[in-house]
Image (cartoon, rainbow, N blue to C red; front, side):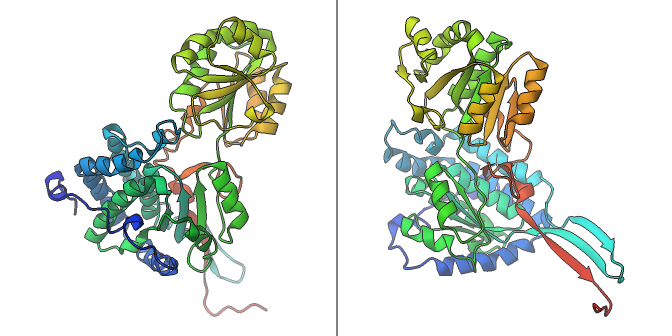
Length: 441
């Protein structure tokens, strides 16, 4: 059953039912977590065709309710300082809503990752053994100021047979409540319990309760600031998959095509600075620093990018009159700016560049610009990051761009998932063994 636009737009959606800011916060979230766990069983058993139809239904509903979504989103935007770099992440507009609907349709088209037989064999005792991909169960996600994550997580979890528990930030409470209300309407149309997508109160007092709910939640995924990720890592009793902060470098090696390097650096920094795959530190080979750094003045000045330059880069940029220039402090390296800011360090060559990245990288996305094949291959082989680029912008690290559909985040750890954490990783394994009375001697 797919609603037409006219059917789904007959009446605006009120967010009050799921906006915890408008009612007294509960004493505990355990009943909600228990309901989500029970709903996971329903989602696990949904036919593949129903899961796809549900997501297409939701995409229709999102498009039909654009005006109301934008109204609720504006309530959140009005409460955030214009200077806050997170405001761009919070912002929804017509283009972004259309992109979210398209993403829902793309996820609906992806193959179901569950039920796949990963291994099959007959054991010596005559036992028939299979290893099968199965849903994780109840997936908890803690995130900040990004209402698109609400839809991305819900879509990926439902498509992979999981329930999800969403702990969004207070700064996106109106937006998240509105979107979850729409999700619940689509779930109801297909007979799926609303608890399959559970939005928790924004009150931070419930975070610890979520992180210790090992009986009801199967995995926790934090998506947000480094402080949030570290808090979850230190306090969670539930297994955790980190979607890490991005401290991303681009190294301009001495053989680089400087026009190509400028385009890559500028794109990585200014195309959308508030996201985790944007550029934070430019590493420049000393042999070309005098020639290359001045080429950045025009395009970076146009976006009022503030530069924190080391002792070699600073006089070069100062002498050409770069307007927003600071002397770099030690803390400006390894810093995720999430704004029109970046640091610059001049290095003596590839070895020093690799050493700097090794020390300061968050293992998210790293890039080299070079025309030296040997240097390119050494960089690609030696840099320890989820995504490593040769002659391209780090801004490409994205589940949609990688043809994985939407993503829950970019995992910077090495267990279970690394890089775009998408549909294919929202499963675990189950061993199924069929016998005929065998006993072990």
